[in-house]
Length: 113
Length: 115
Image 1 (tube, chains in turn yellow, purple):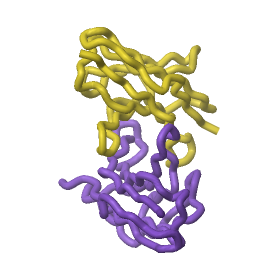
Image 2 (tube, rainbow over the protein chains, first blue to last red; image 1 turned 180 degrees about the vertical axis):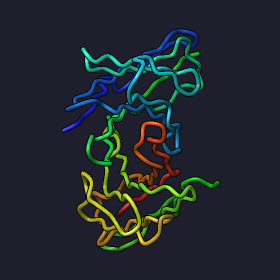
Image 3 (cartoon, helix red, strand yellow; image 1 turned 60 degrees about the vertical axis):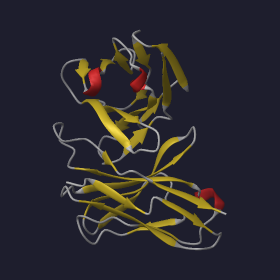
Image 4 (cartoon, rainbow over the protein chains, first blue to last red; image 1 turned 90 degrees about the vertical axis):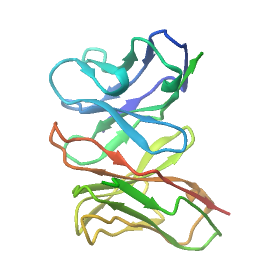
């Protein structure tokens, strides 16, 4: 069965510093991986996805993610964090052969001014 | 486009009561989903649908029912509400699973408390 893991409940980073939010996956076959962001009292919003192609995927709001097949990771990154990036971030994988998506438990990012 | 809309935004139920959470999308998406979000647990899939008239169970379907009579609407029915169903419920839609379109669009959520 497909699964994703987000090992950190919370990540704190100073404004202007680079940020990384970690995600590892377990799939059989080629993974379809996603990152979503949730601001307080809102639904989730799509950030980026990896289906195939370049290992470095660029998404919304200056975020990018690096797909690493050997380490089965799909970490979310941003070169310079903003206070407004503070939110809950979810990694997800699509269950191949179905139309179901499996979400991680989420990582709360706090960017400190 | 309004996107994905959900009603109500908040609801308090007593144990044993029933209710329907409404979800509508105006993007003509075939795929629709219901998730529940509990603190520290991420999102759990309750039910999903790949088109009108077709529904299937997700990870946590017990205590819930769905129907999909139209492309636009995907209501979630709670029968005999229990405190364990206290959660935030999100509806989502997806235009397709081709690489160019595979993206979930989420509604704003319904916060349900069962007392």
